[in-house]
Image (tube, rainbow, N blue to C red):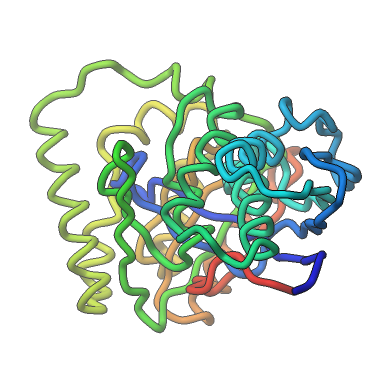
Length: 307
C-alpha cells in the first residue's frame, strides 16, 4: 500500500437557493490539490501550504483540525504530513474550508485502507469546518465527499442523502473578489421568519428534490427560489440583483448566492446555455471596478478524487 496520495478536493455550492444548511452540489473545474503522506513519526503535521497564507499549526488549520479528530479517534500506528495547494480562495463562498477539511481525512482514510465510510469521514471533517464557520454543518462537506447533489437529512446523528444529477445540468459561477466571512453572513440572518415564507421554502426544497429525481428542468427552475436567506445576504454582494436578472434573461434555470457568498451560482440546462449565462454576467461586472472570476462547470458526481 502506498505511503503517499495526491488528491483533488473540489469546490462546492451550499444551500442551492432554497436548501439553507442542507442542500449542496459538487463542482468539477475548481478545487484544491493536497498531498497526504504517512510518516513513522506520530501526529499530524502540515508541511507545505501554497496559494494563500494559512496557519501551519494543525490545531489552527481546518485541514489539521479534521485530521486530528480522525487521528485521535483511530489512533493509527503512524503519523501524517499534509501539503495543501490552495486554489479556492478562503471566504469565496464555494467551500474553501470544506475542501481542506474533507481532503485531509479522505487522504488519511485512503492511506489506512479505507476503514471509514463517507458519512464517518464527513463527521470528522465537520470538526474542521466548525473552525472556519463557528458551527458544525455539512452542506459543503457532503457534496465534496459524496459527489453530486446531496441533502443533509440530519446533522446529529449525521445522515446524508445522495440525490440524482440530471445529465444536462451545468453550473456557472461568478466570484467577486471581495471577502465575506461565513460567521459574519450568518450573523445578519433573522432569528425568526414568517410562517408563509417557511412554507414556501420547504415546498421549494421538496420540489427541487423531486425535480432532480425526475430530470424535470422546468420544475428545477420553479424551485430554485430562496425567500428566507437571500433577501438578507444579497445586500452584502454588490450588483447581486443585476447579475441575477442578466443570468435569468440569458436562459439560466435559477440564480442564487453560493453558500454565504460573495460567489453567485446559476444552474442551466446544457453547457452552451451555461456559457451564455457566463458571458451575460461578465458584462454586468465588467462595468464595475470590482475584480471578479467566472467559471462554468459540470456537476462533479465523483467528489474528491485521487490524482
